[in-house]
Length: 627
Image (cartoon, rainbow, N blue to C red; front, top):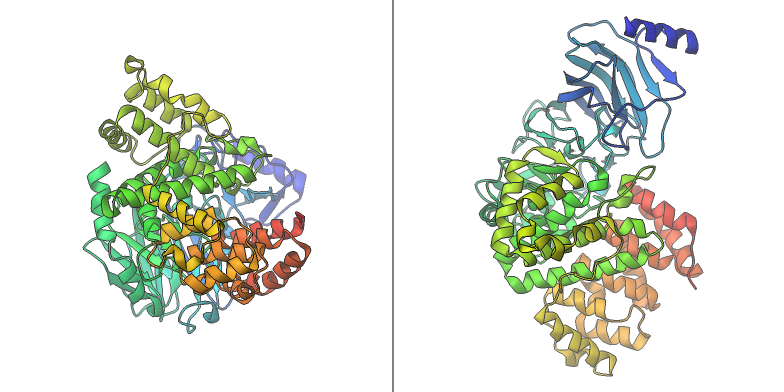
């Protein structure tokens, strides 16, 4: 009766609509939810399973089909509220009925999209939403053949984190809501579809692929990739997907994945996701990696020929415990995903590459954190582990604070209680909270009960409140040192005191050592110093994007002409935000650089994902010039 009354009231207020047609509402009263970035009402009605039946249309760059959502009712409610962004809802039906029902689509809310309301009763088991994506479906990146490695076929990939799953699937896009999913995806017959699910390893003749994700995941871990893709195994449970032009190089680069899985299991218990496969995407992918379960997405900038950047793979694997298995309940708790993952990543790396390598990674992470803290000095609240992102894009919280300050907090706990005890604690934590989403407060309660008891004074030594709820880095921060980096620092001192670059004898330095060397040098050098370094070590020609990015930034600051053309090429052909953003920031510091940045951006923008575009638009529109 309540549903009927509501429909009559809306019809009277807004005008008469044909059954099944979209109804606009001017206001939306949020239901009681866990997440301020979601319109959904999972405390009343939760989605337990999603089935997708979608066609991938490259000609019109859209997905079209039906999402069937299975419901679980907890409290009386006459409306299921879902998240959408940039979706065109065609019609909605319920259960096995064919009659189209009215649905309610609210106004656009910044950072959230539009609420989709579907009238239901306590006996409604499923809702069926027929829809198509649009040019505003920002999770999707459609690439034409020229933007791929092979140049022959188009490519599609998704990026759902943080809250962009709603732009290709109407869903409860809330990390506190977990569900299983299945899908039937139709693609051109000469292409392969893959998802964050059980995957095929070769193309079929029909172009229709079925997927099952039997473990419960939050919406941000739903993923899809379609293209001319091949698979090669690297072990019994691991393998690499990529375009044919890249797949053999990628297999060599990531040949240690099986060993990584075993190392992680030895630390924190069984890997629970079946296979650990990766896909190397085209260069426009905006991140180093994305931990989509069963199919990690990776940037091609990791494929450099010497396995020096594969710690990113260890990081994404670590998410199989921290993030995918135990998930942050809201984006305010993002450090629970990333701080734990950085800690586990470095433990995996230490087992495979040794303590020196892990120590160097930790020092580099600390340097990144210090730079981030400097950037955020006018926004101290953003340097807390527990964030308040209400009315902000959750992407704003995805800084080095969550990653590196979170890591330091966990390392402090390890050093306080001892590694063996901390490892057992983490193993228990993952087992007891498996396939759950938790808040910072839930973790702290678990930590205090199970590890930092007052009997040995551990709690006072750690000072949880200062680490989690206060800005900056506490005084009891662990000391991060690397013996190998001390040698590098002496070389920097020699160079700055007049020694020639060739006299430093750094020809055989590792990637980590080069990164520290470049970090320790002043950002701005004189032309003679830049020429000397470049002549000795060929930085401008480096095939390692990590090294090249730091060098190009110095080239901008130092007005080193030789880097101008490589800089433009790099920015046009690389979409990884970690590299692109600091280079545009550096360019925008002078009027001449800003003008150059705008010219490059006009060419590069079609190759960038919407997440990177949003970042760069803010940088270039502000036109903040620091003289």
